[in-house]
Image 1 (tube, rainbow, N blue to C red):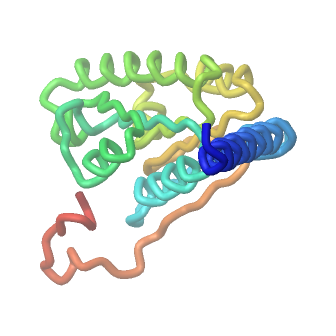
Image 2: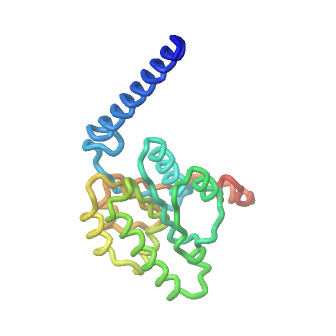
Length: 210
């Protein structure tokens, strides 16, 4: 091999060694205090109230967490599995898993018994994800309705939240959050309407409401 070839090989070896060193540093960062590290303390966060922005805020947390290397998953308790709103299109591009568990908006449901059964089945799937240890963040979108309507027992939810890995974040959204959930949660934000375009006769906008 020529002297130039030897020099090129040496350069490639140094680059490979440097890459291995960087990867080792990232792993140490994760173990010692990075996004999946020992310093992380899983939070229960609730976005409730009658104002706009509960789901939007939760999606923002998912985006931030995913950017930090956390594994996140979304369960939507009202939107059905065939829903194709803006967030679903973005999550598909980011390869972030999501699951529609409902049958549309609850107040339009034609069969409330079916809605209740879907709510319980959805909670069973979400609970499995929360307890699996596979996910760093699990978002239960519009889950407060399943609790408020009595489709899912609060005691079962509390038991799962208490039994989860202490590093797992759980985000819950929706109106009418139970007082017990509010007391249990680490962070609670109540969105209240001040002014909404709908009041001026402006319909739902793609990319804003859906």
